Image (cartoon, rainbow, N blue to C red; front, side, top):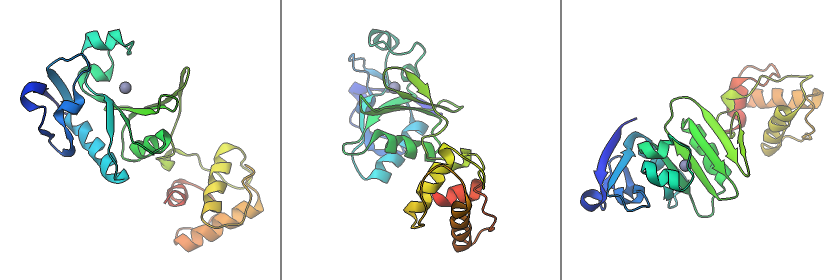
Length: 214
Ligand SMILES: [Zn+2]
């Protein structure tokens, strides 16, 4: 975190240090306030997103004054009021895809708003991921960090088995995504591990998850 104070009148046209695709004025509060806070370490992550998707990243909302934040019904103490949160969208890119990439590059605060079509990212120190549709629903992962996934093996069942099966199918293994870790899934995992030159044990742990998402 490294929050710098800028002024739209003085700095608005300048590029954000470390994030040359963005001008300082893009982070200004929508109430016309001249002063702008920007966490430039967090803006560097935004630059990464911009470079990764090779498309313009639009900032719906960056810095907010406390009064403006209150007016629009933002959470009190919102990271926006500290210059540490950005609400973004990219034309033609699904918000979940953006959230997943944000997770992969280590952003800890991520809110995905599929209906309003934007992603909130902030520079909080500990992880908080959520979806907002009509209410908040916290999630463990957007799929950007398979290291968080549980270890699964023959006999396991459920959503994570299905995830692994879908990844294997994508990689060309002819199995079905039924959420049941049986012999055919185990064989596919072993073949995948052999091909990836890692320990062939048929158990999907951290390393296998990582490679499944490569
Ligand atoms: Zn936000």
